[in-house]
Image 1 (spheres, rainbow over the protein chains, first blue to last red):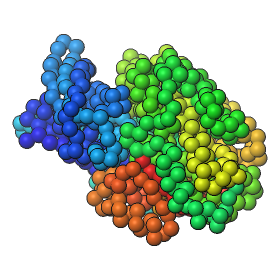
Image 2 (image 1 turned 120 degrees about the vertical axis):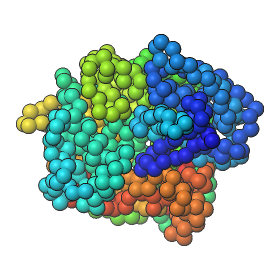
Image 3 (image 1 turned 90 degrees about the vertical axis):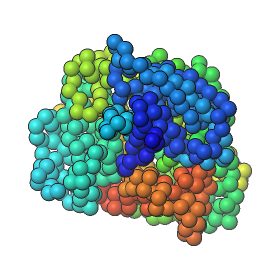
Image 4 (image 1 turned 180 degrees about the horizontal axis):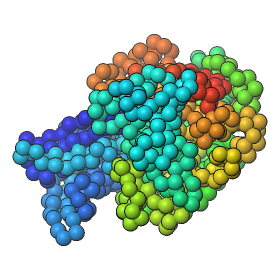
Length: 141
Length: 486
């Protein structure tokens, strides 16, 4: 089962996405990220945006992926609620290409909450445990 | 957990030393009350993945750190540096640390003083709160009235509050009473990514969300008449505090340079105990680039608070008339890195001082303070929580010696957002504050629950610890009348 949860961190929020594959865990973490900012269920999927990022490790790839989504939020004024990604390993590291679906932010209708400022490297981990992939990081709010 | 086990020793009424062990280049110095120390120790005992004492320790291991790795009474776990952290580095051997500033570069507080008393304002308070709520864009996705091209953004990055004044937001008089006169030196827009600038295009003059706020307050008590006179504050006077930072631009600079400086750390072979503590030698190309970009972020925050101050003045004028005149008392950041002169072991040295969740707090006689404040030292603006008090403090000679002239910045969180949202309902918080006579205008009910006063440490205790340690002095206490939140 894919999903996300928030762990306790005094100043900020530790975010954990999990799923049967690393791709599912990354998508769940992205949902967790936007779940801090809006009511995900209220978001229609009328717009989409493509994202390509790469990094040396899966951990750094998670930071690249989530911070790129944060940037898209401001550039296009979008909130995003559904994600699909493909992650490929290559000689120099890992690459992610994916699509995110959502719509223009309407603070009232989407039940806007706190804005996430950045994706930190604190508590950053991506690992497999008993057949489940977990992608974790602390976000600054 | 016993304090002795980790080498923590009480050396004063509100001062502790973390003994220099293993890779530490300097000891830790923690200014806090015993209850805060107990909390920090229990975080270690509970094997919390994030704890502030370990962060004080990690900062103490960085190259070129001078004196001590410092934490002030509002200390709580951050990432890299603790929140409430201060780290000063020698220019030759020291490093620039991205985590010593964080994502919200030059997040800070602007204090405006009105010429009205609480008795005069009270009957019109609801109208004033509505007018402020309407005038100042706040909350997730809010857009500023000022639309700038990327090229125009460059001028903001270069000139900070000066560019806002040039565009008609406020007056030259404001600039004299902003830290660094509203313009950090050394800003180079060429060091800031196009993405950072594009994200900011619609965000100049927006308040943001989370712990950012706009408050109408009354000067509740004056403890230091001499300094209060210098700052133009008196009991019963209505004032306004604006707490916000560099918005998306600062956030993206932080994100970009965590990556860039991370690579530099490896190139220069600097051992880093935590990825958030990535750093580069101050004089290296990467270190210089980061400092030039951080100055741009700081300038963006100054411009942002300048624009918002202007919008606040408009709302005041609309409701209370032009003679309610709002004068800027001071504007000071609490996430910054800058070069400063300090006396270290009897010698004058220029150091690179990082303050993460702490302010500059220069005591009497420093020429960095505006002329009118020089005799008493510039004001330190301490944000309270929504329901409690804020403070105006000042620095002391002892603070110059012990903590590189630094001051506390706020109450500091005690509960995570998650725990606060579970414990409080936004509506109930607003109602209970209304019973205390505080009006709340908020864009997000959940945001209010997460920012409930009970989610923070007791600000009075935090202030008391700074006073007990002799690093800061209380000038005046401010009590909220109306709060506007994102």
